[in-house]
Image (cartoon, rainbow over all chains, first blue to last red; front, side, top):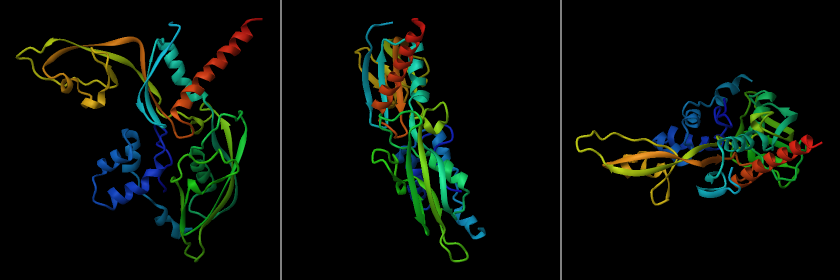
Length: 64
Length: 253
């Protein structure tokens, strides 16, 4: 639904980087790996949180 | 064990650092690591009083997300002390951790840009809204991972790399991967990411010998933002010390 606040495995706070990642790598043209390096999301456990995430709030909100 | 420890800061900032400590036993190094993860208490949101929640998430889900937001933790709190925070956001907007209003100016979210919940307009035309009061409590990482100040705290041996000769003329060039921090023959400390963790990048065509330096540990300490790395290490040491004192007191009748 929303990006998790922390990485499931190591506990690093990753939620704060999601909006920039989405803007630059998902909607933009930049290489996701380079964006994650730039954001300081180094470990592969934290990187999978960002790479595999999908926002669903807009999908479910008509059914409230 | 040595009477004095030799501590050297290799590099880092407030949130993440590498620290070399000499003169430790493996047991003490591990004790310090565990103290930083599980015995240094931090403040985290634990209870909510929800006034209104018309968002797409249940109260419990919002509660979990708020609990995981790191809060700055001054050292004058006792176990079980609480701080009240409040959140009041109306859509269409996103509620961020920075929207939390704290009753104590020293206790505030360490990161202000963590999205808590996105609030839209309902099909009926009403705006989704969230209003709640939250109690943050001081507790340690043994009760819940959200109370742990350290993130991925660990250590490796310091490795000494010495050149013992040239590589044989017809030997195959193989990568020689090593992670952590090495000590060169001149006593210089070099983090391995400076040469892409590959010793053949730094010493091309040489035959090397790599051995652990006894009693020297390189700690990698990262915090969630509730305190600085320096404070986390010091509070970890304080916690070991106070428990050792307590043991001594109980044993000496």
